[in-house]
Amino acid sequence: MTKKDWAPDFFLLVVGVAFTFGSLSLSFGSLHQPGPGFLPFYTGAGLSLIALLSLIQSLLTDRSEKTSRSEKTFDPSLLKVTVIVVSMAAYSLILPWSGYFLSTFLLLTLLLKVGGFQRWLHILATAAVTAYLSYVLFGSWLNMRFPRGILGF
Image (cartoon, rainbow, N blue to C red; front, top):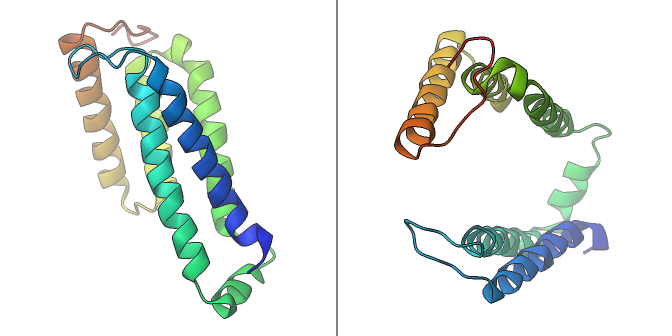
């Protein structure tokens, strides 16, 4: 097994464990009133679990499968990851101008299309319902303030 096969998984495992143990010195709070250590602990634990499972899978995968997979010169998933990262950066830039609902709708539309949804009706409906429900959940029930933007809500 080559170093590059398991190195990213191992790195993410180390980062996840560091987040998990680093958050132990912070207050967890409760589920209804989370403290500053709540999110880093569970994020680190989740990342550690996923990285550990991926590391085990990398170690158990047959070497011949890996070589045939790595012979590709261009992996289409790299383009998808690039589109997602750029769209998240654009989302943070247009959020104050366009407002929460519109920018979230546009981001979800793009992510669903990149993620493999084929029918535009499903993409637009899912993005609209998700943006609306997240707006209601966080804006109304949890009293979070979002940028109003050009739509005014």
